[in-house]
Figure 1 (cartoon, rainbow, N blue to C red):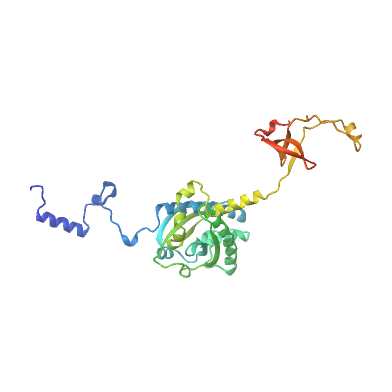
Figure 2 (figure 1 turned 45 degrees about the vertical axis):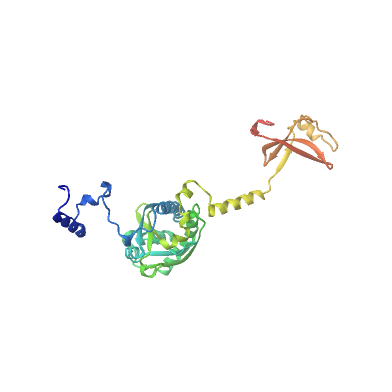
Length: 330
């Protein structure tokens, strides 16, 4: 009985539980304690989905940097630095004005998505597109119609890069809808909607650094949630756009015409003999009658065959496949 708690000790324990005054080690998850879980702020994106989104936009970063390097004729380096989950309200409130927000409709996603360029990155792209370079201290306060027209042209090309980035997971068709420079006018989902924010560190030239953010609402990936599987990424399983491309490629290859020729062994002759040839003359070949013929496909030694005649036409019957083509008729 000495091991039982007294009534006073029980009352003290209950008070500590209700007041949250437990010893900090009691809630340490590494020590097997209890970790407080808030159901109102429960994560809506699984770790696997976060990992897939990181891989997709890592691929997008490489494609985008290559495109801008060629367009702006300077070195561009983009790298995904984080993928975190925020509510749409938290994300919008974290943005400063002016900012470039491209609204992209990625079919078959369930809602539009955002691609954000910080003002530093946006104005550097605009300046270099016009032949110059703008330092961070000279950034204007607002974007002109010409600025937005230049950015819109770039976003129209970016839609193709987004399609390519997603192609290994699922076939998507991205369309550019509009550009917003004020965060308050870019409400694509409800403010309480969870979103995945993919942050890309962007470096243009030697001195200009900024960020590019992709905002993917949770409701957007619901129709494709099953495809966001790491097995599809790492096992190189062909699905979606990859499968469609493979089928088209196979069909084109099947219907492609190639040159096929049947050849005897080469015969040598003097130039004076060739010049003296007349119609009706006979050339003596070194190829024996019972020796197999060489079948070439696009000038590559592929098969061996036998000479024959069908309906008064010479034919070649393929008898075997050449494994080491360079050993024949050399």
